[in-house]
Image (cartoon, rainbow, N blue to C red; front, side, top):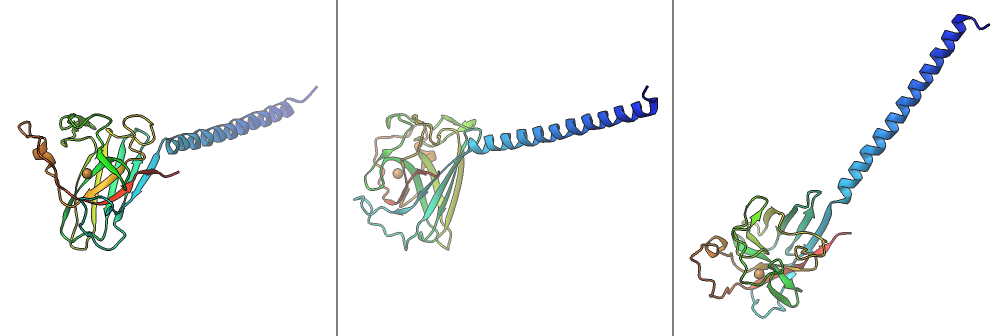
Length: 214
Ligand SMILES: [Cu+2]
């Protein structure tokens, strides 16, 4: 017969072993699950960029903006499918303001303003972007970038109107993003009384192709 003291010792050792095993398994599971969820968040993030070069190929552009480089534009689509655009201009004329639009076509042969696959008669002024009105006529109207005394300018915007790499009408990959000579009156263009029949003479001065970053 095994003495009662030895029995208790043995069962204590077994419970300690079970406890140690359970603890190790929990640690491994937690670590795996956490790293998995981190990877998933990282997996759902999409990045793109556009490197700005001069666009002298275009007939309406004779304006010399300065010495290259002209800056770059970063795009990031987060796990909630919200796209952030960060525009960094450099070597632009000091104390100037420039409108930026997304255009169809390439930088050597730019087309019309990109308008989410809709024609130019479709206006996005009251369309919601992240719950507030877009306030610009076209879906591809980005905004006006102010350049400071040193020739650099920064502009940032978040929107859920555009997407990266979704291969549908909201996808901006492969389109051109163009910096113009002067600023646009986006608010005035969105006034209900605005007459949209006039032309928009605003030379294209720099352009970049929106390309995915692998
Ligand atoms: Cu434009």
